Picture 1 (cartoon, helix red, strand yellow):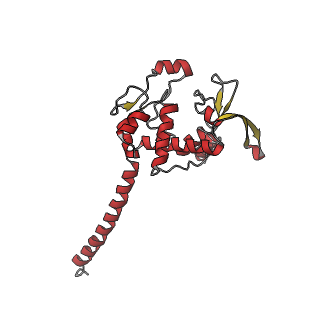
Picture 2 (cartoon, rainbow, N blue to C red):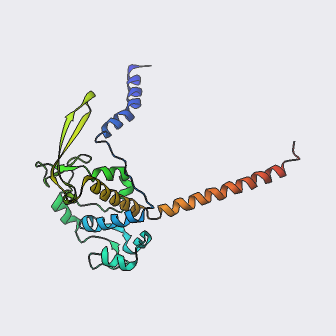
Picture 3 (spheres, rainbow, N blue to C red):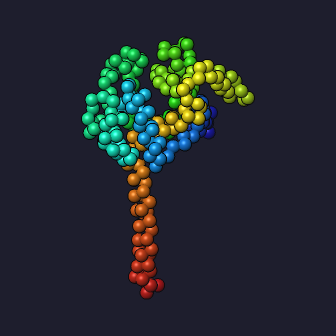
Length: 242
């Protein structure tokens, strides 16, 4: 085998490891979400419309679909629709993409599918790792998403924190957090708020997920029973065949 071929094979074998190393960064925390927790989903919807819906829409989600969370149309209309939108309308924003790009350098993305594209753990960690950065245009940065264009919209709840990154053992980074200004919520309360928000975003990405999983379990159970009958029928037909 020539040297060039060996080098090519080595590159192919090491490519996945190189890709994995490139993706390494701040370690993601597990998001303790529960898609069946209606109280959490309702709280997450409230946080979303109060803090996120100003810039980020969920244009494929209709307000009246929130009745699946145990809310009445009256409750949705009085507590979650903060504009002149109708109960059957989608969760859109008035901010134009061009204006968003002018304000933040990039247009704020729609969040309908963010729960599926990013995942619950990423969102949960991201929303809890903002820190003050005087070099950033917005004054904020993020440990999970460095040089993020979005400011920390929940800073009044979490407060202001600083981050110092040090080199630990084996060259791995160590993150040292420091609270500069306290927020209106304690650390546990803020983590709960973020948990509820992420729970809602995951729900928005696939509102029928819980029902789909329930139906899937029933279907598998029925198929298991049918398999027993099918196997018994097969034995009966082939009992005289040697």
